[in-house]
Image (cartoon, rainbow, N blue to C red; front, side, top):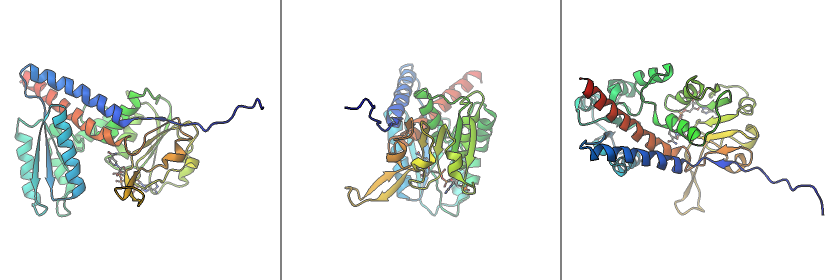
Length: 307
Ligand code: NDP
């Protein structure tokens, strides 16, 4: 016999996005039920879908189903792919002025002949529950109230739910997109929020592993399947994997498997906390969209009282 303790590989604790998303949705459901009990209508979320991209159709259907599940009203406005930009802007104008609709999203991507930023800029910031309008992005940067886009908002909720310490930690964000990397880097650095020290990396970053290895919290949002390997991660780091990819796999019934930007099997043996794919960041996105819609509804009621 030996008195040496057997060295077991460390296994990260799982950040369970399904559990957290369910908790967020349960809380929304209770609040909406309370509003309806008091004679209100509850929030109403609308989605605008242009064209027949299968992924977009799936996302919009999932959003509609989730809205109904928490007791919200939900409407989807469907248009053919050859809809003109002007026609879409008119739909947005209509939704901006429809007092029954609290918030709406225009499902991206749009057909190539439509200017996405023109469309986003035309959405009323008060109804922009995706948080993509420059006014909401500006409020995010300034740390003022506004709609935070759902995926970064969901990441913050995950860290918060599990009481993961962020203050003073070194957070490395891989990716600087407008919908994930950049907003999450701002949220992580905010004084009245996560209060972390943040490094943002992108495709021109030199010697990436030397930077990721210094991260206490590593947020991977680069859209490259299984890019982050164990040798890029510091022992005990918190790893948030935003990526989602379908990898062809004949051993699976569906013919593919889902994976993230991180090699889960090896990184989970080194990290202290990790989000799985699927079941990590993904489920949070719709939950936070609903949270924004509830907030838009409350803002409308508040504004009505003041008027
Ligand atoms: P984008 O393609 O818009 O942005 C990717 C970012 O990663 C860019 O900033 C790019 O740099 C950087 N990048 C790409 N390759 C490298 C590399 N080799 N090294 C360093 N940086 C690199 O992606 P998104 O932000 O929209 O999405 C990222 C991932 O998250 C995707 O897999 C997407 O499917 C997923 N996603 C998941 C969501 C969810 O709900 N779970 C929601 C949204 C996205 P540069 O700026 O220089 O081009």
